[in-house]
Amino acid sequence: MRTLKKLLTAVFLYFFIFTTPSTAHIASLNLRSNNRQMIPISDFEFTNVGHVSFVLSSITVTSTSSQASNESRIGFFLQSRDDEFYLYTRETRNQDIFEFKQNTITCPLDFKSNSSVLFTFQNHGPQFSFNKSFAITYSGINSLFFINCNNESLVTIEGHAELYNLNDGNGNGANKNFLSAGLTKLPFLYIIFSFSYLTLLGFWILVCFKNRRIFNRTHLLMGGLLVVNCVHFMCITSDLHYVKITGSAHGLDVVFYIFQLTRAVIFSTVIVLISAGWFFWKPFLKREEKLVLMIVIVLEVWGNVDPILPWEAAVPYNKENGSFADVIYIFAIFFPMALSIASLNKIRETDLNAERNVGKLWLIVMLTIVYVLITKILLLALPTRWEINVVKETTIFMFCMLMLCIFRPVDRTRVANADETGLSNSNANSCFDSPV
Image (cartoon, rainbow, N blue to C red; front, side, top):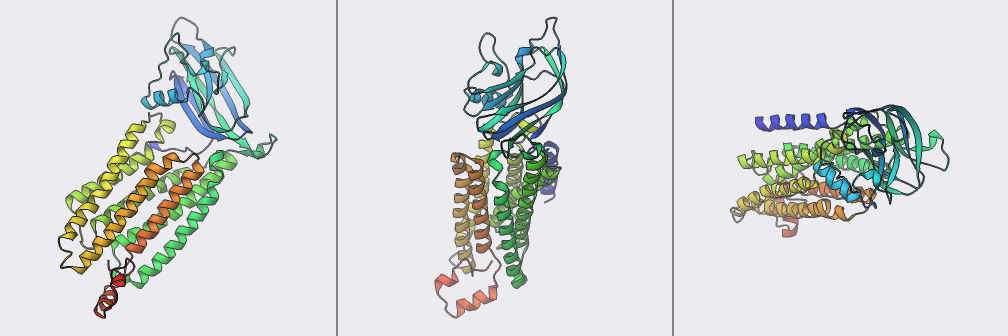
């Protein structure tokens, strides 16, 4: 367990180092003698009254060669999902290879179709300032990039970019909505989930208090999962509220990241511990089960950090690595389940509790299969973030509720007396009344 504690400390430190505010849509643009050819700034879903505003106090372009810089090849580029250049930028960004071939149209600033070249540095001179707003008249998810197709040009920029929609047709600052169009319905959804987890926590405390004689550490961890989920949704609701009004989360997004990671780690930990039977039918974990638990925790941390890195730390994101991690995660989750079922099957004929536990494990297996199918496969087919979040969070909530129902603490004496008085097998084998 000492190794596990060291691992947890390391992965949490890794998470805090590489996660900075990402939901805000007032993006800081501070570059110092930078020659990167493509810098992702932000993703944002615009309505038909969207805007991109630049407030750049100082822009300087210097050339490392004797020739003057071609400033028409430097600028800001807004890319639509419908753009023919979209797949190209995704592939190159994933590999962190931004090399544009000469004599061919491979610089994003050369594309004129569905993409939008907001402005270039042409005719502005080597040093200037820029303050202008651009109206976005087409709705949809867009990605804002800074483009520098001159390898020998060093760019220094100080300022920020604002991405927002208008709540009505005028341009008053009070009507700016910095929340992406696909996120506007989420605060209400998250409030509902927060109260749902709070209600479930109340029932869980009541059940555990009534059966406190057989209450164990896994039950405590389950309660902790409900608390973290509740606080998680409160934090993300506050985060989205401040982003909507001010464009910045005022530090609440850091708290959100903390609880997001904690929630994911505890959720997977509870599944592994239940599958291994920790404090249910054995008081310790085997060596291979501890290894599985550590692998699952690392994969959860990686799954939460990796998608953020391209935008926050300029680290390339490879979707293939994410898919590979998902496959390992699935195998790691089911491994302790298979071990426990195999070991309990050997004694189920002589031990009534073993037979009940096998039945409950099979229920968890089926629940986990449904959870994996929905969260890892079905979500890929959903078109909007609103639908993705509704389906994902509903699935997690139902999984937690059923898991608590199956493995809730029940008085062994009451169940044993019920067996002796000849209650029906359906009641004796019920997941609600079986001892844990």
